[in-house]
Length: 385
Image 1 (tube, rainbow, N blue to C red):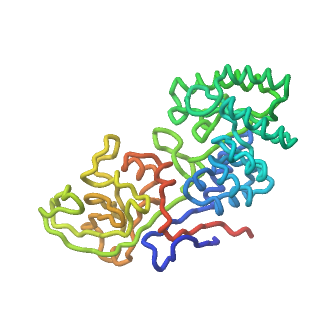
Image 2: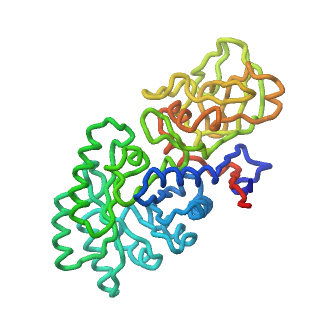
Image 3: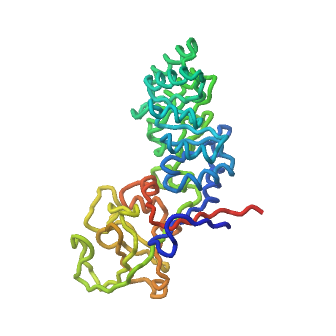
C-alpha cells in the first residue's frame, strides 16, 4: 500500500483524515458493473466531495473512468489538467464570462435553459466552432433544465437549423434515495419521452441512488457521486460500497470533572457522574458540525445525544457544544492505556460516515464536503505488482 501525505503537517495537525483511493476505485468498478451496459461516469464536483480532485481523478482514471461531472468551470479546468482525454461536463451550465474558458479547456457545458442554448450557440458561431454540449432537462425537480415541452420543441428546431451540437441529454432524479417513491416512475416516464426524441445521442438519468433502481433508469450513462466516496445512496442508510474516509482527532488534554458541573459553552449539559473528559482538537472550523452537539443545539432530525467518538473499543458520547477548535467527549469508561495513545476515531470502521451525519441532523454529502483544510491528509493506494 502506497501512502501519500498532503494537507497540514502531521506533526502539528489536530486531526488525521485518511482517504482510501483503492476503496474508491473499487466502488467505481462496482457501480460500473451495476450500470452495464451503460457507461459509468464519476461526479467529482466540490473538489471530489471534499477529498481532492488532484488525488481522486487519477485513481478513477486508472480504474477505467472516462467521463467526469463537475459543478463549476474552475473545477472542470482542474479535472482537464489531469484527464486530458476525458469528457468533462459542467453541470451548472455556461454564462458569457465562462464560455471562453469552456472552449479553451474543452469542457462540455450542460445547458439548462433556452437562454444558455442561445448563448452557447452564439459563442460557437462567432468562433466558427461546433463545440459539444449537453442538454439538461427538468423532469420535476424544478432546479435546472429545460421543461420537457421546451426540450421536445427545441429538438425539432435543432434538427432543422443545427443550432448546437449536443452529445448528451440528461435529467436528475429528486427522490431516487427512496426506491418506493412514486416520483421516481414519474420522472423516468417523462425522461423517456425526451430520450426517445434525442435518439441519436446518449441519455443520462441515474445518479448513485438511481443506479440501484435498475434498468429503466440506467440509459446510456450513469453519474454516481456519493456512492463512490462510501456514502449511503438510500434513505435506509445502507450501502454496499467500501468505506473510503476515516477521521481521527488528537486528544490535547484529559481532565476530571465532578458530578453536577457543566461543560462547554452555555452550560447546557450537566454531568450526571464524576467524568473523565477528553478535550479533542477538532471543531466546526474543521467541518465537525456544531449541529451534532451533545446538548444545547437541538435539531429536529438529529439523533438524540449527538455525535460520538470511538476509542479503546468504547463508543464515547460528545459532551456539551462543539466549539470552533475543540470538542469534549466523555471517556470515563475508556481504558487508560487507550487514552495514552492520544487519538479518537470520529469517522471510520466504528462510526460510519452516514451514522455521524445522522447524529448531526445532516447527510453524508454535507459532512464530507465540509471537511476543513487543517487536517493531515493521508491517501492510500494499492501498489500494482
